[in-house]
Amino acid sequence: MVYAAREGDWNEVFRVEEMCSNLIAELNAVKEFESLSDAEEKRKRALLRAILADDAEIRNLSEPWLSRLSTWLGLPPPPSSGHFPYH
Image (tube, rainbow, N blue to C red; front, side, top):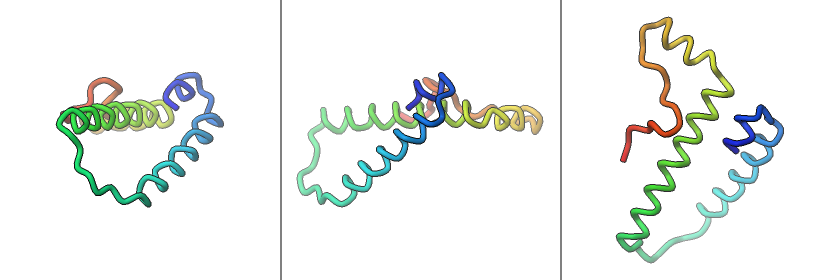
């Protein structure tokens, strides 16, 4: 999805976003009874960080006015891909 956003292919962004929404709904419907191993939990967190960084980049690409508004208001700019503050 982030690659499509970088290319300005918003139809593809919306198509993939719909697919992701459907997959998330399916995952939420599944009840997980086993806990994750330490390695699985670490991988899960890494994936979530990557997803959130991509989401931030897509938002910055789709709504560049947010960065300009932040600058105008004297606020730090919205986070960009690769600079997500949470670990």
